[in-house]
Image (tube, rainbow, N blue to C red):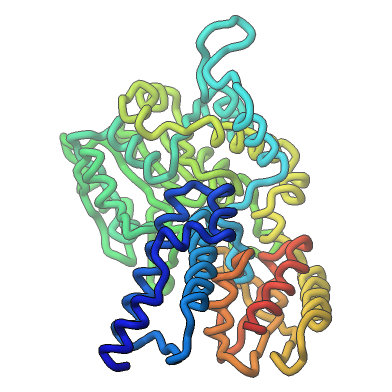
Length: 475
């Protein structure tokens, strides 16, 4: 493009005022804040100028000012729509990863969703005892349910399990030593590691044993006058197999009693149910660990429990009461919506069979293969009804799902999938288009095919998923 023609093209671009006076933009101003529309128009015009100057925008010599205005108005409307869309959006999870950390982990049960809606849209007795009309505890209902379900003496709930570990160590071991096996120095999500959490708590880490083997005697040798606690960390997000030996919680409790030291067990992804009867790997339940006798047990609320994000602390009243008085507790306390969701989730566990039916995480973990295959063929039929056959090939196959969320790392769950082989674009391009759609869809790509895993898709999502795939393939 010649310099002279470039100047002409720049002059043909409308001004911001001209864009704002356009009838379509005037209508936008009625529906959206002026600053949003104004910034969108400015950004579109800036991009257009940049494109003309760089030669990226190819224009005809006979292009008219009205055509530039049309282009700017259309792009402004798209920019406004994009800018007002909430960052957190609905995503259809077709990855087969049940506790997908990037997708928000556990989905709440209907009962929990209703509880959150009630307290979010009304005043509530969060810290008011309605019986006596005086200030109450936000933890009261949760304490009663947790101690009843698990047999623990006392309970406290904070905003996540890392906070639970931090609070427990800060309360019981600040400035003193905590002994832990080298094979249990785990890293959790976001690159946070047990040694770093311990350092932040003010406790001093003492490592014992080897990565693959730690014996009870290793702990005894390390105990000294500055020892405050023995810590057991359940490696819920990985497994060491082969030539291994790990000291059990029961063995640590025995040592703790011998030396008059408290024992803490960080379960990470704790479960209230034994799910091994459904073919899942054997995991220690919270109740089983408490029976072994540790003074403090911590675990997450939004993993195998299937509730909201929370860090649950159970154990002896002596230590829990001290944690409640720690100023750090206020910094990591849960809000009213977490209280409501967790209470409703825990009430589901008062009937174990009902919990398996009603809590989405447990539903997805225990659903049988026959149901998954029926769901897969239903999705295939829906896709065939809305999809041009020239755009993609569809097949129903067996596959493997994952638990995710740092839980049951060795579990391979047999599942049913629909494999989509696009003809005109790559599977990666289809995946990207689905990610940008409304609703967004997350699948996985294998051998240039998009895999849609039915384990993490409920029946109500089948139709919108089929339409989303069809729309993405037509782009």
